[in-house]
Amino acid sequence: NLAGLEASRALQRHRGEANFLNNLGHAYRNLGEGKESISHYHAALRISRKIGDMQSEGGYLGNLGNAYYDLGQMDNAIKHYELGLAISRKVGDRKSESGSLSNLGLVYDSLGQMNRAIEYYHASLVIASEIGDRQGEGVTLGNLGILYANLGQIEHAINYYIDALEIAQSVGDRYSEANCLGNLGRAYRDLGKIEESLDYLQDALTISLDHGSRYVESTSLSNLGLVYMALNQTEKAVECYQNALQISYSINARQVECLTLHHLGYAYHVLGQNAQAITCYQNALTISQQLGNRCVEADILTSWGKLDKDLGDLTEASYLWEIARQIYNDISSPKVIKVNKWLEELER
Image (cartoon, rainbow, N blue to C red; front, side, top):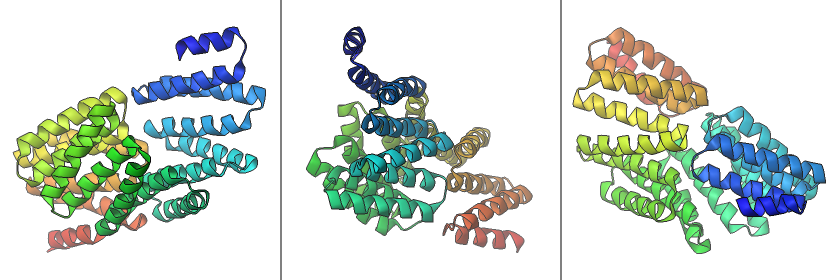
């Protein structure tokens, strides 16, 4: 890409120069170097605007949205996705329109605005189905699975994951395949089906290692930690979490870092290492608030409240659970039922 970039500049082939800059942006994003990827995407965007290449401009805006999403900068992600959506509609690029809608759904899901996310996902699916974009359809189905898993509708989520997995395998999209396998592993773990969960997660980890996907590798390791916790192999779980954290740090995957810190905090709680648990919860809470992920924020507060209760600090536990209850109410999460029950027990 660097040689091609230099040649394009020397020959003043601006469209080629922008394309090579965009490819370098992809390369840096895959390496977890978000700021470098953003710099190259912006350079490509400036050229596309200068030469009036609106089709490419829309694509570069979408890539910028992805990079900002990776960094947890949701406002910037929304801004660039919406700009890309407007251009795709203007030039009649329905595939890009569908992708932008799906990406917006993912952001609003992360922000806990589930109903809005569902609207974007379904709008994306309609277009993908109409134009025969199987890969785009699969990605959006997988995103819908994540949304329903967050709502506690695990069986519903699994149906979406399976449909997405079949599409990923049929079109040879190994990255999406690994993602789907990892999501299925997490879902089956939530249902208590540990053997199935372990099989799916190990398959996801194998693909991520084969294809150099550090992001999927980190999420797979984090989810494997959850399985080992279910098997009461806490030390093994801690090892998985620490490996996942190391990767998430290196690629600046803040959402994975946040979730893994939360899980690691609970593992330390189980081991009786309460100071380490509190440090993990504090760090995870800070990141969740920076990312605007309200569902995860409430989950962390819930776990922290459990620790305080076990330590005999019922006042602090009640305080944390009250905040979690308010958040769950705000985002219409069924997890509020569980927190209500715990608060009632504390009052008694």
